[in-house]
Every structure is written in C-alpha cells, then in structure tokens.
Image (cartoon, rainbow, N blue to C red):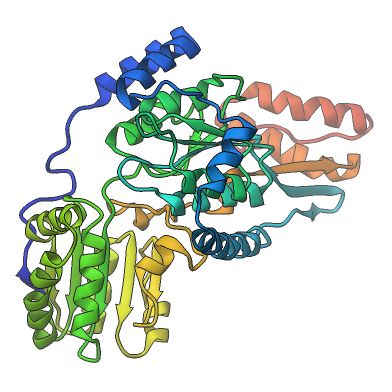
Length: 435
C-alpha cells in the first residue's frame, strides 16, 4: 500500500489498559457467595445509593410522569424505528425442515433465550438510546423476562428518561444499580430476578471485564472497548460535515479513535484545519474528551485511490463506518468489515446511535472483522433437530459406523450397529473401518 499518514495516532485504544481482572473477579466472587446483602454493600459503596433496588410499579409510574412529553415523543419515535428493524431481522431467521435423504428429516428451530439482562449506562448523562437498543431487541426476540439495570444517581435514583424508555420498550424488571454489582445481580438471579441467560449493553471497563469473566456461564453480546469511527471521503465530500462527524464521535471518550481515510489531500488538510475549532466549541466535558481523542488517537490517512481506501477501512474494521463519496453502491458492495455502515452525507453515525432503527451496540477494537453488533438474533438460539424412518436411518447408520471406526470411536459405531441389527436382522452390512 502507498497510504500516507497525514496524522498518526500516538496511542491505541489499549494503551492505557489497566489490569482490572483481579478486582472484578473479587467482586463477582463476593456477590455470588454473599448474594443480595453483598450486592447491596457494593451498591452503597460504588453507587452511593440506598433506595429500592427493584423499582416498584408506583416508582416507575412516578419516574415516567417526570419525563417531558416532547422527550417521550422522541423516545417513542426511536423505539418504533428500532422495533421495526428488529422485527424485520427476526423474519430472516425461520424454522424449517428438510428431507436430507429419503426418510431422514432434519430441521432448524429458533428459540429465544428465557431471561435477558440489559445494562444501561447512567452517570452524568441519561443513556436513553441504550435502553431502547437493548430492551427493544430482547422484547422482539421473545425473551420471557427482560431485566434492565442502570446506575442510580446518589439520592435521586435512575434517570426518569431511562426508566421511561426501559418501561416503554418492554422491561419486566428495572433495577437501580450499576457496575459489576448490577451485572452480578442479573447473572446470579438476585433480588427475586431469574438468572440471566445473556447479558447485553455497553458499559465501562469494569462492566466489560465482568461480562468477559462471566462469558460461558452466560451469553454476552460482545466484549466492548472504546467506541471508534472511520470516515471514507473523496473530493466530493463536504469538509465541514466530515469534520463535524469526526468530532461528534470523538466526544464519546478521551480514548475513542476517529479516523479519516481519503484520496484527496485538499479535503484532508481542510478537515484537519477545522476539527480543532469545532472541538473548542463543545461544552467542557465533551470538549475535553474530543480534544484528547483527536490529539492522541485520531488518524488521517491519504490513499492513492478508492480501492486502497476500501482496503484500509477493511483492515481497521471500524465499529462505525461512514462513506461520503461518489458511487455509494460500489462502496456498499466492496466494503466487508464494519459494525454499521452509513452511506452518504444524508445519514450519520449519530442517527444510528440514537433513533434511525439500526442497533448502536456494535463491535469495537477491530472485532467487526469477525462479528456484527447486537441484533434480535443475539437473543435467539438456533437449534437443530432430526427424525428418521428405519429405511431413512439405514444409509446414515452404515456411514456412521464406518467413519466412527476409522476415528477409533467404537462406542459411536456400536450405536449405529444396534439399530441396523434391530431394524434389518436379515441383512448383512460391511461396517468395518475404511482402513
């Protein structure tokens, strides 16, 4: 490749990774053995909240009443879009059966998991969109019990907008608890909740580590790192919009990488000129995050042509990928590694993050090279079944016996032998190994 780095990152998203494993493992062990009482101890320590853990119907209604009607309308709009998209996704996985050979029928069945645990970040902001993305997809999938947890604010509780969103989208239980203690409570079935079969939703490094440790015992959506975004732009792109979109994603966090890949030096230079000013115009916390992310993690890469741009993008496998270039159909066909793709200036990652319908829980740290994001499918088990007549079992049993003996698995072979002996007592079969 002939790509040129006009701006090179000095750090990567894992440069400041700290070893939180031992701390998180200790908390999980404590809560598993101490159950509800120990979870409450950690909630008092980290959440600094001592109200009800499981919100009552009355508390939910009171919280919903505090949400302004205009915000409720926006939440309903986003929920309907996410729900429509999830319902369409669900239709792509269907039950079927197939006669593999005469007399042997095999099939597929999609079964939703029983209990889903949805983590909704809280803290300084109300992460309403995370409630919509996680709870709605679980509800559409058909999970019988959906738990939603979010860090409460000291002396206040869970943000009313989060309560409203979780309730609207179908949460059966809303829990005022955050961090590792919330993940543990859903996993271990504390406070009268069922044990979660799957844990989903974004969170900080401690939440991510808890999910990583518990994976296998429960399913998870993914192990998420800092959010990242890449923009592919050619000479036709508007540099102000490109710069604005980069800054919009850099504000996620001080270590959130943003990348611009282009084949036009003039565009690259103009974007780099505009970004610092756009960052300084943000509110203080957003400004600090975006400034650090742009300074330490951002890259601007100049490529020879669009094919090299696409190859660079696939190598980076970004969580969010935006194309602001001509011939959008070519890019849609060519690009292969991304969590979610935004084609054209008329859409933006911010739309997907909040309200357009696609899910914003997406693979980070180049995981998009092998997986997609949260979808209705994550809550569903794709299982198989089979049934056979005796005639249908006959050729399968013969092949099974011979393959098993070749592999040295005599017990497997005999499971086939006994059926042939019972069903066809007057026939002789060559069931020896192929050797």
